[in-house]
Length: 237
Image (cartoon, rainbow, N blue to C red):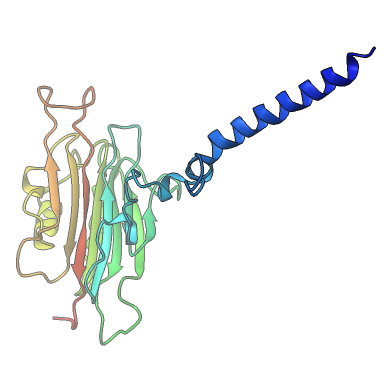
């Protein structure tokens, strides 16, 4: 029993010593400014070795668009599984989540004029999907024939964009600025932005042919992604 007192003292000294060692390790030693504690509680963003997070702008673009331009990003459908997406000015116009896409051609009509309609430019007029495998092409023709000057036309394919296409359909898209619609065929991937009243071919178009030698998916080519900045038109031609 006489040893109980000394043993308690020894145990206390050992405990204090171990606690001091642990604290010294965590604090990184005298004058260290608590680097180890800071490492434990600092976020990756604050770490000197962490990569800076890239800033994203409207529709996920890596850079902002100039003034009087509309930011857009669009993705064609992937095979017959994943639907297309059309984003404009950070607003999703068409997507599977919005439940307004379908097999064929997915088309969003947008007001592309600025003055004399201030505050209207970039507003969605209508969005519809047209089945180009089993649907009626006349529904598509009725949709794009009466377009007004300055209307922007966003098109994203899904599954099959071309089986029901006829010469009039191809000519109407060509008049909107497409250079690839004449070659569009069964299960090709296609994204396109055109406008009523354009004088030249659109710079916003991508097309990949359906080919068993180059297809990414079994029976379909890769999905296409396209983004950019569309200048707003100042007047109706």
